Length: 237
Image 1: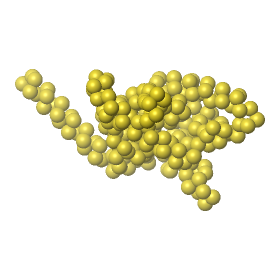
Image 2 (image 1 turned 30 degrees about the horizontal axis):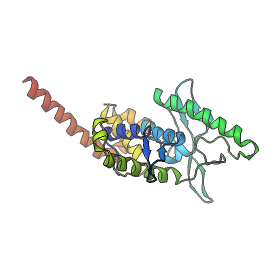
Image 3 (image 1 turned 60 degrees about the vertical axis):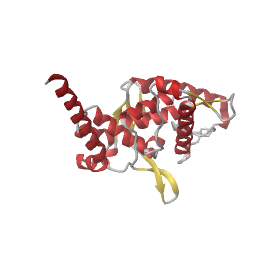
Image 4 (image 1 turned 30 degrees about the vertical axis):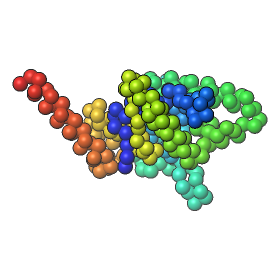
């Protein structure tokens, strides 16, 4: 599974706030707020795509800064629809950081304004991630936009290498959307969160599942630790 390193995750989060030129020159590409929320949720909370798509506003607890995961969107006998989470352990409440709180507050205002503007044409059922008429976002829509955004980002880096270097911004690899969940686990490991807490945070049944899936990123982090230790020894011994 391809994923972002912790450094690349930070660059990706920065990229969501940037303004990019389009191929038409004077027009600009700005990441819609809905997608900024979707991708930030993926990086910070490590949710599966189906878990994110299934979110309703009632699942967001602004007072305690938590998000409740109790359902998912996935393949059913009738196509795509609601289903139980992947495992019992996937039913969980996940805390979210202040940055996400601000984004969600901003998005909720935009969402309510759209609902008012559409009036009787609104067809939504309070899903967080929606189409232009309020209906649930399509299953592949977020990934399609994700690919589009990475292309815009990498084109900008190649076109403006001096500005990019000054801002500490580099090209990003094209990874699967599920790779953002993988990136979350890698980031948590980088921050020295213990494996038990990472496992619970991601909704895994046990720690062995987490280790089996993310073993290579954990091994990579061991090399980072070893490198830091070598630097310390050289500087002080």
